[in-house]
Every structure is written in C-alpha cells, then in structure tokens.
Length: 446
Image 1 (cartoon, helix red, strand yellow):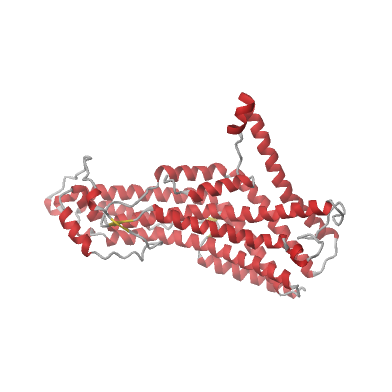
Image 2: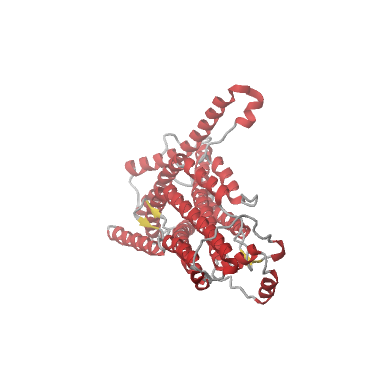
C-alpha cells in the first residue's frame, strides 16, 4: 500500500498505547534476553493490559457501589449513571478490540493486497492519494475533538479551584487526604484519557476503512465511465484523437465524494501487450470492431475490482456489526441521560461539560450513520456509472459482461448493528427520537 497510508499506522500505534491491541516487545528484548524474550514480552503486554483494565474497571465498580449505597440527588445520580455507562461500555470495547483484532488485521492485509492506487487510464483518473489526505485530516481532528471533549471533565476541579475529584464517588479509602487524593485524581485522569482514546481510535479505524472503500468505489465508477477511452489507449492507435478530445473535455468531478480528479498523461500510458480475449461472434453483434477485445478486457478488469470491493464490504460488516450495535446502545443511553442533565440546575462549568458531551455524542452518532449511508450510496452508484459508459455502441460480449456488474450493484452494501439495525440517516433520526422519548418518560418520574 502507498506509504501515505498514515491514518492506519498512527491509529495502530495509539491503540497499542491504550492496550487495545497487543504490543510486541520482542525487537527490544531480544537484544538482552536472547531466545527467552518471547515469554517476557507476553508478560509485559499482559501487565500493561491489566493496568488499563484496572483504570477502567475500578472507576466503573466504584460508581456502581455509589449508586447502591448512597442516597443521591437526581443530578448527582444521573451524572454517576453517565460515568458508569461510559466506563462499562468502554470495558466491553476493550474486550471487542482484543477478540476481533485478527479480523481487523485481515481487513488491513486485504486492503494492502487488493486495493488499487488509481483508476484505469482515461481522459482523467482518480487517485487514492486524495483519500489519504482527506482521511489524515478527518482522523486528526476527530481524535483532537474527542480528547478535548472528555478531558475537560478531568480538569474541572482545577478550574473550579476545589479539592474534589473529577467524578466524586465511593472509595474504600479517604481520598481527601494525601497521597490518596493525588492517586485517585491521577487514575481518574488516566481513565478520561482512556475514554477519549478508546472511543476516538475505534471510531477512527472504522472511518479509515469506510473512507478507503468509498474511494475505491469512486475509482471503479471513474473506470467504468472512461471504459471506451481506456480501451482506445490500450489499443495504441488513437492517441492523436484522444489528445484532441482531452483538450476540449470538461469533466464533472461533482459525482465523486472528494471531487478531485487528475488529468491523464496520455503519452505515459503504454499500449497493452497482453493477449486479449476475443469472443467469436457474427459481425452483426460486434460494434466498435477496431477495439472490441480491449473493451472486453477493460470491463472484465472492472468486474474483478467490483467483486473485490463487495467482498471487502462483507468482511467489514462481519468485523464491525457487534461494535456498531454496542455504539448505538451507548449513544442512546448517553443522549437520554445528558438531555436530563442539561435540564437540571447545574453550575456553569458542569453545564458546559454536559453540553460538550452532548454535542460530542450527537456528532459521533451522525458520523457513524453518515458513513453507513454514504457507503451504501457508493455501492448503488456503480450501476449508474456503467450506464454512463458507451454501452450502446458496444457488442453482445460487452453487454453480457455488463449484466454481471448490474446484478451485483443492485444488492446494496450495508453496515449493520448485529444484523438488526442498518447504519443510515434513518437510524440517526430513530435513535435521537428514542433517546428523547426515554428522556420524557424519566422526566415524568422526577
């Protein structure tokens, strides 16, 4: 894969930092321990994972004890419920990422092996460099937003100049005395950092895969639209006509997600030297006879590309459908609790914190639903792109192969939550309505 695929590498490094993926200490330890480094590497990785598990689970457990043993006001109760739900679901996300790490790596290997760097040669082409630049920006700002939106809770006691913890709850020791206060504060700060990175990184990884799939669908559509020009370039006898046509052509990039295309250097495209398949048909069924074999060759290449993308989307759905359901459930709970908290009488700083969490949760919900919707639209767009090709000028062999793409394109690409809920904009409105319906019910019992 292109070396500019930096979102995947940077996300993988950060995921190892919070122990979502195992870390191999072998390259470092082998210098000192020889052949016995493997067991030590596994031990260090296990201890590092236990540290982050303790950070997550002790906060969730102490909040549950607080709910059970303490009489709380409504605003305090729901603040603790919010924290408990966040850390409990984060623990499940940790388990998910460890169990499904192999499938995620399989997706990476599939991308590196079979995804294309650019569309087929034509008057213009699309490149995956556009996708990488866009993904870099999106991943960077998404991680920054998640960190800022969650770490504000950690510095709330400092801003309010009070000797309290970010999340006051039951502790088995007196946390108002030093050094227990400092230790409890430090672990809660680590907990908030873990929350921000776990939610940001799992979302960023999902984002990377969807962006790459959408970019590949755009490349496929571009190849289908340019299929005749690609065949003429492979034939090698039409460079003068193509150059004249290229100077006058105004191509529309609005139909592509990133709206960026590059002018093809026609002189750099070498004619095809591979033996081309040529169907023996009557002349009445053969149009564009002079490069009919090239047309068939180009369309068969597009069919292979389409099948690669459909299989990737199936692997993506198989890997992420438990994660999507977990995220939808978490967002539903948070929206309900945060809406209730926002209507309570809170201090200015707490109200700002609640509104930040609320906006971050809404953004996260829309992002996931938007990605599912746009991937589905990209899959359906393939058939439209094929109809824009000069199919009416082509013979029966070409049209028979068209049917393969058209039949595959009619089956929508879907991302679901445990095969029950489809990720699309309709789901976004459904979750928001359900959250505020539950908020109304809870509000009546106040």
